[in-house]
Length: 104
Image 1 (spheres, helix red, strand yellow):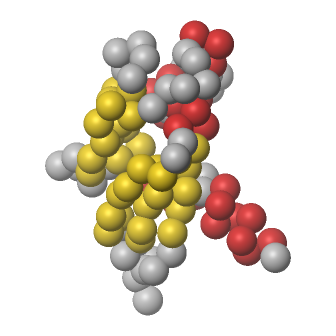
Image 2 (cartoon, one colour; image 1 turned 90 degrees about the vertical axis):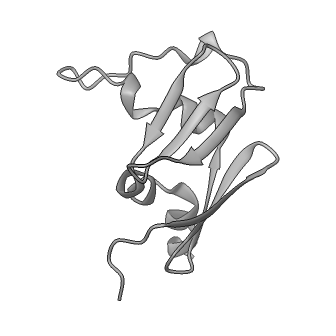
C-alpha cells in the first residue's frame, strides 16, 4: 500500500481544481478555499492567517497551475499577483471532499 500518494493529474472544473491521486482517490478544492488557506499566508509564530479574504473577489481563479519540481501544487492567482505552493501531504490532510466521503 502506498502511504505517500502523489498527484497523478490536475484539471480545472468550474470553480475548483480536481486532483487525481496515484492511489485512485480524487480531491476537489474550491479556488477561493485554496487561496484563503494558502500556507504562505500564515504568520510563522502566531499561526494566524495574514491574508484577508476580502481583498479578492469570489471570481478569483488560477491563471496557471502545475506540479513544481518539489512535487507541490503551484498556483498563480488571477488577483493580487500571488503564487501559492501546497505540499502533497497538506493537500491530503486538508481535503474536505475526501473527509466528507468517509463520514458516509
